[in-house]
Length: 166
Length: 200
Image (cartoon, rainbow over all chains, first blue to last red; front, side, top):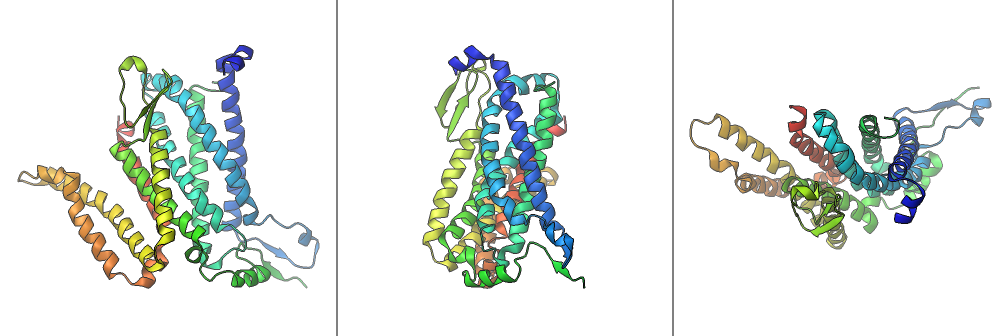
């Protein structure tokens, strides 16, 4: 780390990390939202015409991507959380931004619960998909989508207080 | 001729045929399925308990880059302590142990035990909150009701009754349902505990 900070300043390093965290969040948000949409909205297509060639990605195809994005995203968030606790939250409390502090505290719980369900999520999306667990699969996916959306919005608000471009 | 085909996520003909080849109850039949479901349920319960009781496996002091075993407060000059890592690691380790145990017991015991612990996890905070309301409104001194252990007695009895009286079929059907109810219930408790921030 010392060698790295010899090349770039510590604030720049954390801002790069935060930007990567944001980029991963956008990718994860897209994947989990598309998967949720695929589950919630039955896609019908007309057989025997050109629309046949435009086949929507099945919801199952997003599962591995969601797991591969969720885990590093949570780990990166856990890393940046150190900086948040010392560099962001203390002035946030000083300025009495209690709603932002509370929402961010809740975010850590929301992400943790999402992580807890991730092994089951991955398991229920394994091929061949079991009809028996279709309902559980659907709700676990929607729960994960909620955790990602909530974390994204709250993280964005915290970033606006003290982060990239603030 | 245009024919509408259902492109919903439910496996189509070929997938259905493959699904038929798979065990009838994948999660209940495979050890991996049992582990991941038990892990998810146990993690949600344990994390909520660890957070509420403040039982981290370790504490991190970011300002001075120091790790301490267990819950360790520090002088103000050492900066704010971080317990979240310790809660997560302790909950994950505990949930992994629960998951492993779940793969070893019989399916019948697994469903009964899950019903017992999940009902207990739901009733305990419920009775504790009720005790608080009674203590506030009662004309007599009901301070003793504020004890978390007092609330545990009816919760324990209720959980025992529920796990004894529910049918095996219901316990089996509810098993994967707990996977969602426990994290949501945990978030309700954890969210309520943060009301100090939202009511300031």
